[in-house]
Length: 167
Length: 180
Image (cartoon, rainbow over all chains, first blue to last red; front, side, top):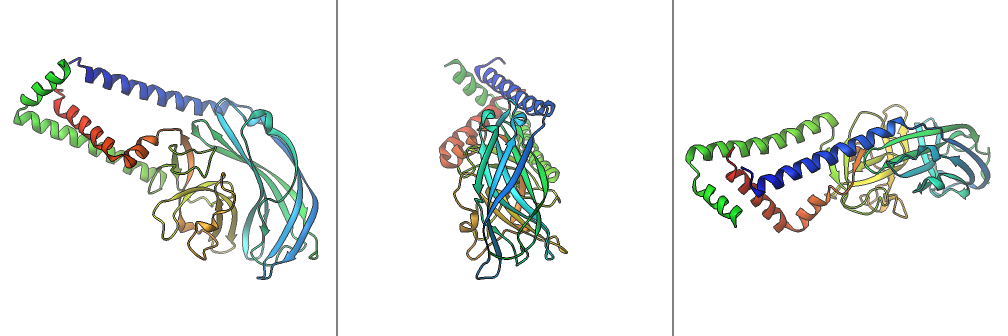
């Protein structure tokens, strides 16, 4: 009855169950953290604004992004993935989301930052709808946990617009 | 020596009735595993509810050997979500993040562009030749949960099949020799 095999099996089963339970609790504890992130984005410059040779509008711009996301970090947070996306409507598409810049924040100390960058990914429309276009800039974040459930949220900043003519 | 001796003894003492009970209990284990997997498929709506990360393209978020829980709901796909997708002509699904979304006004059909967090450029090089966007039908699910290291078990077993056979053999022996 109490052979080596049985004992090893019981020990392993118990260890795995306990570990799974601890992981579940760690993930659940994320729900109780107080979160009050803030962000501000300004468009410093439109570097380039033209129609590509195959017909789609393309913009290059410089952004000034400042954000305080320190409150998103808990003891179960491995890293934060942050990105800024331009979001707008066109006659053809009910939603366009174009990621302009992103970053991985591995540490709470780095989660309060200010950065001036030009767009990391190309801002290209599906068509020629960008002249005079009003759009939102949205700061999204994805909290990647050490274990368990991932979650995400965003701050939407409306009221940006592009110039009326190519330059 | 004692343990091995007992094992050999108990194999010798197997009777036909006991053999049947053990075959049935083995069957129960296999079928209940199958039931759990199929139930997960129903609940998550994804044809593979759990995937193992095989490449480092999402580091440091997901490392090789981590496992991801997938969910496939009717919710529209949005930028920032981590999706698992199949590219035509490739067997192995890829786990990457959505960076661009263009959703049609009437049909709700989407054009999606993905990128691995750790990759320099977007995924157009991974897509089928001439393919610029992923559509809804390419996407198998989105990642909702994460568990580190557990996937190493399957990676080791696929890369070193001998370990798989040893493990299956040991489990089989354990079932055969158990008396309850």
